[in-house]
Image (cartoon, rainbow over the protein chains, first blue to last red):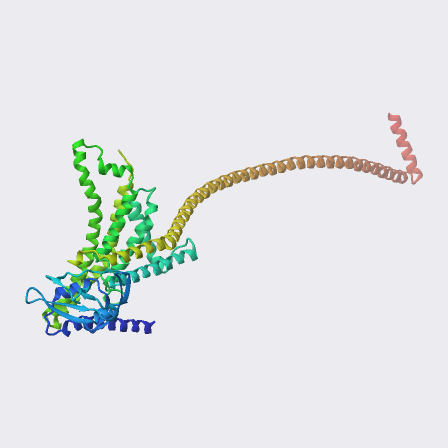
Length: 369
Length: 164
């Protein structure tokens, strides 16, 4: 036991060390370049085709993830060929900006990576810039990016955890929970009772519990993974607009397909108000169908991304001031924010499921007047 | 800007992973977990109901027992009382009987004593008479021991007869 705890403390020390080496590496490696905090933050919260582990940004240790392109057939290669290709510097329109992209080599020949986006090289074999953005066409990019990898690991983690909870009940029957089931049962019951039952008609809520449970645990687990600064986590998955878009579209579709006569009646021909008002209310209600999931999408995206930005900005203070003494201030503050983010991780999952249940509840509500 | 633009590839993978996750969890996790939790909740509710029912039954049973005990006690008291009465009665009767018997015995004894007494008296009388005759004989014999005495007696008797 003691051996184990010693080991875990050692592991933690090593990983914290690696984390800081990682940050310091990429900032001090290009000493001639001014440290750009917003670039560093954007780099960390955006998707990537590699999983950077430690060392400087260019030439450090990374896991190169597979690139899958749909461009006149399926093309797959390691992102290594894109990151370690031919580096090209292009002078931007304004003289102080120099644009930097990498041309792929080997199987990645004919493609270039610019700001984590893959472009096709034109006939001259270069990217044609229009301002700061390349004009070249982009192939459909179905790569296993950092976020996709994180998504797969998160899904795997949820499956492992929930299957072991289910296994407990399958083995022991309807008994008092123990171990992992004891931890997760109250949360599952909370989703069932306080989220589903509370907001959806008592006779209809059962159908929606699996969806709400999945969406809650998906968001919660991935939020938590996002808070871990090294390998199993570190991606900004739930703070990615695509993921929150998908989740809110799911809620929108569930709501629309559950809507009964009463729900649609309230949208297109609001009962109990004069006819001119009915006509006036109709477009407002129709817009309302979409603003609700839109708010869900923005809320989750903004909350999680903001959390990551704050932690990165606080750590960035050390490098902006180029003085390790700032760590005395920025590390405790980043720790405080990280702890707060643990609460936010749960809260955002809860809110997303809660509001989804609320919208579904409104869609299946029976007329009561 | 591309921070708030959706990415097709990620959308594709999110869709696939989330749908698979929803399907797998719904079928192999949520269903058994919720079934077990529901079953347990039902079991607990039933057990509580049963406990309340049992308590009520116990109460009723206890009341019944008390009633029976009370009745039994009353009956016991009754039986004791009756037994005491019967015993008293028997003692009384025995007393009366024995008194009567004793009186009878005493009576019989008295009668016996009386008859014995009468017999004894009669015997004593006979005995006394015999004794008197014997004494008289002895006296007479003494009186008649000599001639003069015989003469004197004869004279005397003659004299008595004459006097009569």
